[in-house]
Length: 205
Image (cartoon, rainbow, N blue to C red; front, top):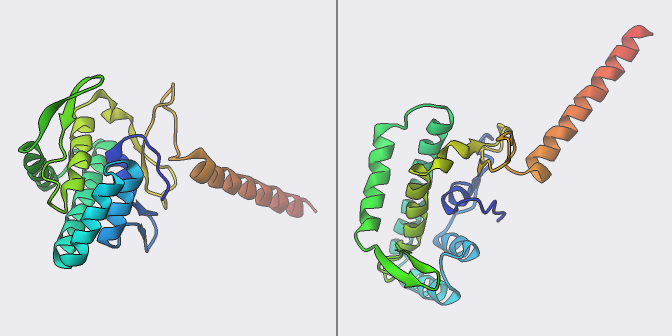
């Protein structure tokens, strides 16, 4: 699926597309979908993906549980950011739920040395089928306490519902992607203008 590549947690929230429609587009229908997306964004290696998919074949119930956790986490993060975008306080139960996920992630987290210095390793126990959620949780936590939080916006197309990070110079971005929602809005305005001109012209005859 398409990625905005702004923040991992934002791309994760956007795995449910067209939130404003009566029937949104769900990109995480199966555990395999979750692993495929995790591979796409670089959370896991091909080797990690193969191990998890093989385990899912042996333990389908565990895979289903991990998928349910992923969807629950996604919607919790979305509700928190949606409230912040509307300049409201997130629901206490949503913050409590997110903090519960975060607490489980922080226990196995550790500082590791990299070629550029040091970094967090929040992967945790890779034998667990839901470990792919840990980097997402870390990403959401980092964004919530960062100065970039105020740059999180929702696409102005009410049927889209995607979140994005407005990194434009004057903070005036309205669309998740100008090539998609932006162009559709532009075409819609042009059509309405054309119809209005046609109507006015007819009224003058």
